[in-house]
Amino acid sequence: MRIWYEWRNSFWPIAVGVVLVVLCVHLRNLSLRSRDWPTVPGVITESSVSEYQSRGQPHKRWTITYRYGVAGRTYRGDVVSYARLFRSDEEAAAEVQRYPEGSAVAVHYDPKDPGMAALESGSGRSLGWIILAGLGLIAYGGWKGLR
Image (cartoon, rainbow, N blue to C red; front, side, top):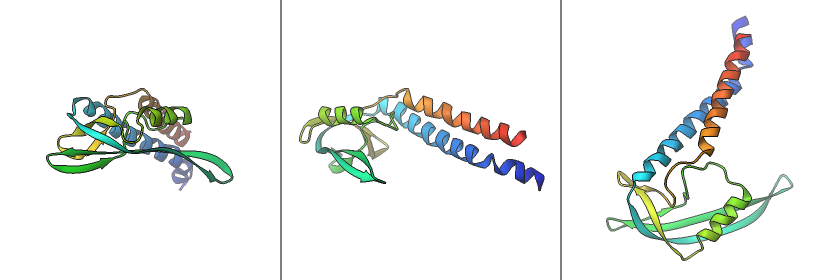
């Protein structure tokens, strides 16, 4: 029983760390694979920033959606890049300006699953930092459980 008591306090850091690592490794894999994906013409169908309140605090929600076609079938997407999990308000506003509604874009799509697409391909540094943070949480939880 004492072992469970010692480890239960370390469960949440380990659990959160594992979720962060698994999610970000998956997204990093997608972002790296997207470098080799073919492109097709697409069009931005919505590009906007809206404000809303949550728990009395103002927040912004940005939306970029696009339409593209592969092998005679039309698809819709909303992923700008798999390489960034979080964006600041300034980065989101810049993306909305970079992809105005009605503009023509090149859409990178997965040839094995054309419904998977992104406007920007390649990897970025933000996922690496989140993976390191997840590994740190796992290490902290393990250390805390062994004390």
